[in-house]
Length: 458
Image (cartoon, rainbow, N blue to C red; front, side):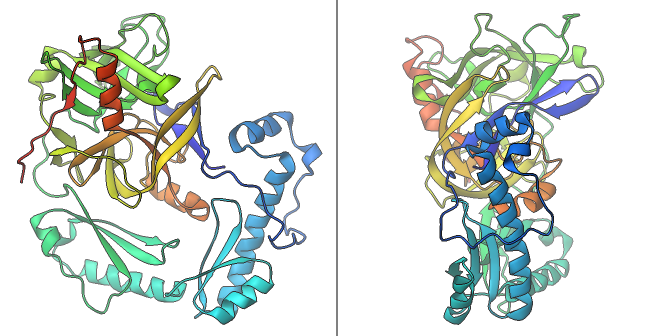
């Protein structure tokens, strides 16, 4: 099972580390089936199941929902697939299109011909017919990179990333949705490229706090001599209720006092040179983690200082530090392009890969919480929790969890997780959050809450 982790980070004086809170997606459960290839003698021997340390056995059952033997078999089969794919690629270079371990745990060989599929199938592998070989896809990537390097800098700055999407047998070119980006014409010799327009990417950088930027919080005052850690999260969507209260909607697990009676933890714009001197921008007034609605969200009531700094504006931190103006809200639909903003990974993009996910979140005390949201392929890192997710310029949700918990950056995350289907993140739908806040408001704070948007932008 793919492991996700809550995206809050914790600052210990002079350092930042990922919080030890785990999420585990229930979508990718699946034991090895009998049609999988017979297990060869592994080149690197492993311990037997009964020799595994008790702590590892406990973690395997808790986080992966596997038996120790299933865990060992899957690890060995993954290495077997790697070796087989390497040999197959050498022997059939025009027929090989990639290999991966499926979400159900089965090894898959992607090939370009029926004959190649018969060969891999006879060797015990599940097969997938793809139109483009891995070599041709790499050739397209090389051509694309050479073309990008020939562009004027003002134009190439609008290209956020190029990714080989092995599962869908294509390249994904992420281009900023700007005037230059929309006019960008790909050379006709480059095939197999999907262009994804992302908001932001060009223009001035506004030095004011907005969705996707950093905030810190603590269970007690920053002046508390007994305070040992400070939590780091990302601002979500600036919002307002029917009484005009300025609010920010972020992740529930970011409230250090979630589930406790002592509500009202302060939220601060961090002063990295002196955390105790950080300016307070508000306090948590509501927090939800699991429960009957299975949502992960919290509400920050912003103070006058936050409003004066610009947190009454419909904005989100975009690509290269620019600003995305929000124009409405949306609901997650599988296949929809999305981008998210967070203080650690900044602005990254992907697709909605599942519009309904039920996951288990384990708190620092070991308590299990069921969380419902949607899954995306965007990379998120520690500290991105609560940050804004958009589809186009429409507010879609806030970041809750990711499978890149320990990754130092998205490049490392993409490389390490490629064989498992790539990075995956859990988002909480903003419309579900707003409805729940309003339902629980009793006509008071949060009543008829809405995300601040500029409907006629652009």
